[in-house]
Amino acid sequence: MKLKLRSVEFEYPSISVLKNISFELNSQETLAIVGKNGAGKSTLIKCINRILEYEKGKILLDEQEVAKMKRKDIAKRIAYLPQKSSYTFPIVVFDVVLMGRYPHLSGGNNKENEKRVWEILKILNLESLALRNFGEISAGQQQKVLIARAIVQEADLLLFDEPTSNLDLRHQLEVMEIIKKIVREKSISAIVAIHDLNLAARYSDNAIMLNNGVIFALGTPFSVFTSENIAEVYGVEALVTEKEGIPNIIPQRPI
Amino acid sequence: MTRTDIAVEKYKEYKYRKIFFGLFLIILLTSTIIYSICVGSMHLTIGEVVNTLVHASNRTNEVIIWNIRLPRVFAAVIAGMSLAVAGCVMQCLLRNPLASPFTMGISQAAAFGAAFAIIILGVGEINMTDIPIILNNPYIVTIFAFMSSLIGIFVILLLAKFTRLSPQAMILAGIAMGSLFSAGTMLLQYFAEDVKVASVVFWTFGDIGRAGKKDILIMSIVTIPALIYFISKRWDYNVLESGEESAKALGVNTERLRLFGVLIAALITSVSVAFLGIIGFIGLIAPHIMRRIIGGDHRFLVPMSAMFGSVLLLVSDTLSRTVISPVMLPVGILTSFMGVPLFIYLIIRKRRLY
Image 1 (cartoon, rainbow over the protein chains, first blue to last red):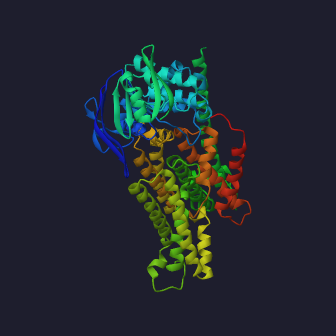
Image 2 (image 1 turned 90 degrees about the horizontal axis):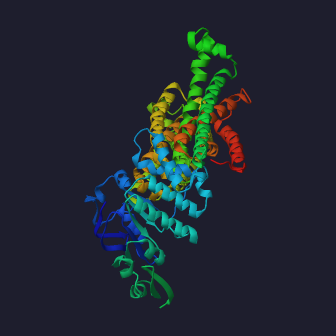
Image 3 (image 1 turned 90 degrees about the vertical axis):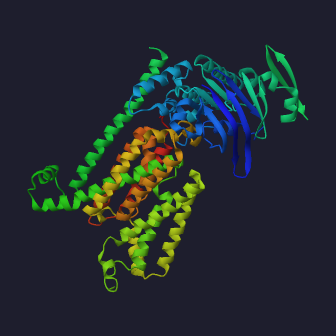
């Protein structure tokens, strides 16, 4: 898998959100996208699998232009976890995960699909939740269920829109660990939009810092998460030290 | 057994429960149909019914069954099915538990069409000789009701298509259109003679007995392919439940699915309403009752809502013509009296796992 973005632009009516976004993503790579609220993180994620239709530029998935692919074909390659997921009507966890098989459905073999779902639920230790109502489990469990759905989709690129935003400390780490593990074990790639700079630094190979819809910095966590960049983009004075080969960011005060 | 095995067994049980409930519904529907054919102002035994259907022995029974009871039973089954399945699909497509065919303003629009035909065109008045062709056509009220509800739906769908209305906004647009048509009806009634006002009001009471054999044929031709379409889209509806963005990401063309689904649901409802008048609540209640019992999986929900809608309307209609016989109550009243208590019971009952 190789993903290339070339000068992608997107605007909502009257507001330009993304300008001139270009980067590449290789197989087995985890890319973090950080930036202030409204910097365009979610928008960028949604443009990649065409939930939002970008106007200018090109997004190439193995040299194939995403804008010209069928939705189902995109879904076979790219899985997406929204920031918020709500069901209008009650649905059990198993059936939520089963939906991940939708792009691969062809007529019949339900047994095979159900078998895959059980395998993933077992790996993520979620079997005992299978018959629980999705709306009644905790936010952390919900996030894990949705990750299970993304894995079952068997895509080779996973897009996460703030996967840890409303989770407790333990679940934040658990979710990031799962993401890291599946990227490594299944040799796939992930793009994670995230607020927490330390989680971003720790779990990504490369990072993009967005500012007002343009790429402000792009590179390894060490080159992106510097005191100067954080001061410029967030307006926050921060101390950046090194710990176990990972940048450790300690915010001090707003400038 | 490992933990997974136990979970797998439980899920199987959960699925079999739904299948069993489906079989139960089939039996319930069949027995309701048989019962409805037997009862009425002249009671028949099952033996007599079978005899008449198979070898046409008794002339009176033959007339009762073929010309009166069977058309009525069929009309109730088809109309109940179309209203319930339309409600089920709309609730999913518009992501709103309050959605039903009538939320889109269909009943108000149909009533306006009927009022227009009765009051302005004077359909049904015998001494109007200047436009005899229209007067001789008994379908004119039906056609106007149908056309009028289609106009309402198309306005909403065009708005949705070209301005990318959200599902919530579509419901609001539907309610607004409904109010507009109601105002139109009231305006017409305000200036009309009292006899005509009475016939408009009478038209709005749903009545299954109104449908002739040809009407039932038309209703079936429209409803059955629609039902097959809805069942074929069962996975798409399930995926859509996870939200607009998730559904797109999983490969569903949500705009097209919504546009076609709402259009077809509206179409089958309009046909029923145009032929039978307004039959409220089935479209709202039947799918919700099924959701409470078997859950929200559209693989089961779509066909079972359809069957349950048929049962509900058929039972209501049978009661409406037997409960204070020989008076026949408008079935719309009975559907609410039957459905609402059942519905409220299911809402307040302790929530089961599903």
